[in-house]
Image 1 (cartoon, one colour):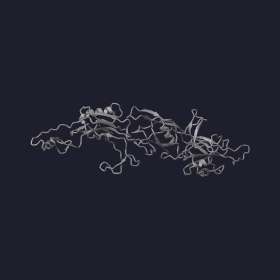
Image 2 (image 1 turned 135 degrees about the horizontal axis):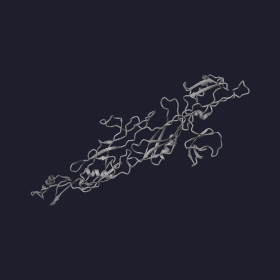
Image 3 (image 1 turned 30 degrees about the horizontal axis):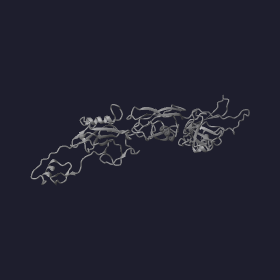
Image 4 (image 1 turned 45 degrees about the vertical axis):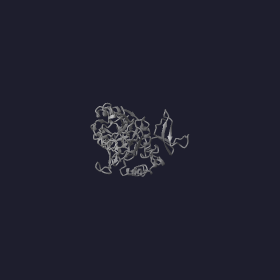
Amino acid sequence: MLFRSYQFIRIMNSYHQIIALNDTADEGRIYPAYSSNEFTTNDAEVGFFYSDPYAFDGVSEACNSLRVNPTFSIDEAAASDEIVTKLRGLSDVINDDDDSLEITRSHYGADSSRVGYIWTITFHKQHGDLNTLGCDTANLNSTNTASTVDCYVNTTQSGSFLGGNFSLILSFPHAYNGAAVDDRSDAVPFNIDPTSFATVLSTANNTFGDVEVERSVYIPDGFNRWTGGYIWTVAFKTRNGDIPTMQVYTQLTTTSTAANINVGTQTSPLAIGDPGTAIEGNQVGGFYGLTFVDHNDTLVSSGSTAFPVVSPASGEALNASEFEQILYNMFDQRDLFDVTRSATPNSVMGYTYTVEFTGRELGGDTNMFQPVTTSLTKTGTANSALGVGELCDDDQACNIGAYVVNAGVGVTEHTKGAQVQGAFQLVYGGYSTGALPYDAEAAEVEMFLNNLPSISPSEVTVTRDGPMTTPSKDRKSVV
């Protein structure tokens, strides 16, 4: 027979997961390994077990210890209530709620070739599609010795239950990095365990990145039984920003109505039974501006929307050349900077732009750029219950202790520009002035010189130009 990955196989009293198959799917590897490398038995099953949908292998403790559960003896003309009582007596495997079973009794008509009763049994709270009931006729007999006594069991309506496979579809790379293309994961069975599901997604090229998966049993409100549905929560550990909503390619099957599988997000939750665990990834967007004050205390401003996070030309994150061009325009089309951009973004898809001051007009240790972020946007939403965001520590901006999500631009200095500091003295005719600050005004220098005995009673006049600037290789980063 052909096997399928992630199915389970029962070998006598032990259950194992199929974790690897050969190309023809007729040989595989199981986990945990069986006690013997070679073993022959007729007491084995392969497929999906679901007596306990919460268990890793789907097998309840009761079914693991006893696979066939007989009732106590039932009278050949038993009333419906007797059979209800006998079935509910199997409480380890049969739901014994008052409304779990519905049984009606009828009899064969006068024109029938049979004599006896017909019991119609409806299970309202049993999981999945039940195995057919067995009937032990060893203690039945008939007054007609010429005929045998029979007990037939027929299924009039199968229980609703899922089957088949599905795949997840996600686009890659992020739109800030280039044109996104949809990629589809390998197909997985409807009830794949979360660890195996995470492995499948994490090995799908770079599309999903490293993920963690949690699985919970899905029984919608108002439903009395489990029909094979699960909710998977996929947490992206290495993909940054606000990840696009996953799509589904489904090959699911069902024993009754059509099978559906849906994807919910924080902003678009599942219509029924959403667990409230989805979180939108945070991603920076919009626009920002920069201001700068030069050595002459002249304010230079780009305007609050000069720097777009996303280039209007490419639809990708603003590149270094575009950033440099905006600075060029900001400083009256003077070529004063070289700009480079980090190779990769941070977790919110923001890049680091390193600005090197190369023009002599901005020499020395320049002031820091100041960001203007009134037009910057974010996609993340704070959620105190899920611990999403940062704890507020500014009572002017938010409630202390509440979770908040902020959007901002940081400016740091990597290399200080070369700049004269300290003090100096002037010497004339063997006499020295006192210490003069490096940026002394002309009048101060003039006074110190005219107080020298080697100059007085003559006088000198001093003027000051500048400041003198030279390329300083001052580097600052905008993040």
